[in-house]
Image (cartoon, rainbow, N blue to C red):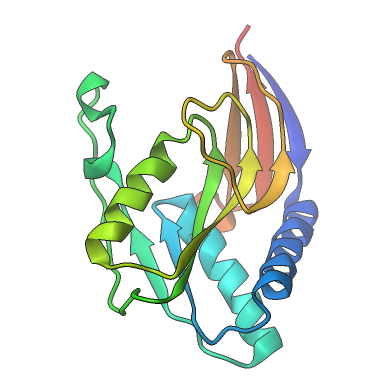
Length: 178
């Protein structure tokens, strides 16, 4: 196994700040924005981006957590019993601009599941997808609105994100199977 560090903590912080400012630039206002982070690392990224925007705009933005495990279309294909985490959307998403945040975009199946789950909660005005890393190899026609880093990977490569909230420090790695 060969590991290559793509981003260190300082670089990751710069990327997260850039994403926050791009979201602000596109949306012009926080009035109808809400954030939903996809379990697990998407939640922490969404919180960080949201806090930056709240500091800049001096506004409070609704925040939710989503676990898409039971909405996945490949659940039956897995030999591992999935561990469902909590979904918590305690605000009305109708007519809101949902900023949906995930860590790594790969096949698109997680995002498809998230879109299905969001629609069970209401009908937002729009949904904007934010991903820290787009690694290509899509199986579904899903494209992010905001991307921190594009890394073209083979199917023998994996992107590993370490965040201080879950792993003690911020790093992004490309791992190649030998």
